[in-house]
Length: 252
Image (cartoon, rainbow, N blue to C red):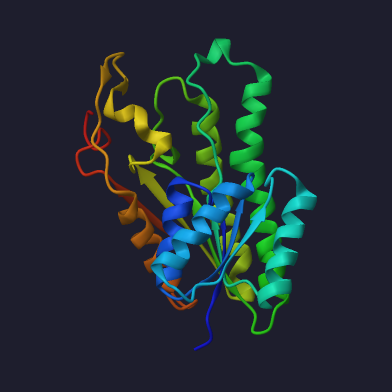
């Protein structure tokens, strides 16, 4: 079986980096996307440490820019001939802000990255997967626990993650004739820079500030690897991977 090609967005840190390293260790060839070249180069180094023969190309990309996204997928196809997987991961939480104090510019910045950026990458991946021979591929969107339940003062992030679920469902339906599968991973409290505040305390629904349990980000990466490794005739439509004791199930 020929090596498969994955594009990973938000690959310079956190979940994106962990998934890139896990896929490299499993034999995937990678195109790493993110705003800044230096972190992407560091991720490529981690990939080669995990698999000395790993191919990992760093392509600095602003996923909110349609032309930049098209160039990313053109670079992937130009180098490797095809794209078999998009891990649609780039995103931001934004600053916790009461809804009545949220500036429209801050709202748009979160929507542009989390939703429009995810759409632009999915659109470009879909085009490539539909056109290539053999046809098909897989898109895995990074949702969030917030695709189900919000945190206080997170209206922009929560709205975008609910919207990502709609994006996933539409892609799944529209991709059927072309062997394009789409699933979503909803992640809760993986230990990354983005969740560092959880170790000192984050606001709860009742107004308290409390420390929350976290899990190893490697557990997220292994889940994505499993989803990515399925044949296109099978799909994990939605997966939730979370710290077992985080406040989600029950009353908190």
